[in-house]
Every structure is written in structure tokens, then in C-alpha cells.
Length: 71
Image (cartoon, rainbow, N blue to C red; front, side, top):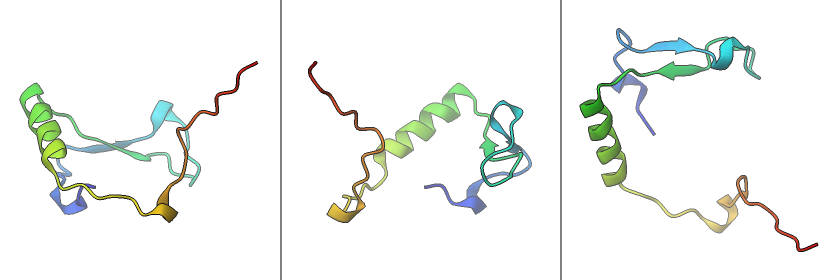
């Protein structure tokens, strides 16, 4: 999670993916944050070092699970 007030809006711009309108009717659904290589590496380091939380049992949603069946 990134706090909105920590984003420099003078540098960041909003844009849609592939110039298409999103499901909410928003033509600019994503914030694009340009970074230098050093900024990107510090960002990743900060993400990896950030506190983590455990999901509760009721929060489990298998969005990326693939059902495997033998044929």
C-alpha cells in the first residue's frame, strides 16, 4: 500500500492501459511513476523490508490458483 500523499503529483501522471476505458469508466486508471534505476532499487528494497501481514482464513481468494487435472 502506498499513501496517496507520498506521491509527487508534479512527476506522476495518470493514464489508462492501452488507451482504453476501464471498468469504472475511467480513462486514466493507473498512476505512472517514473523512476531512475537507483530509485527503483530503493523502492523494491523498501517493499521487501516493509511489515507483512498474515491473511485470515476468510480472506483467502484463489485468484491465481490453477486447477490441475490428469487426463
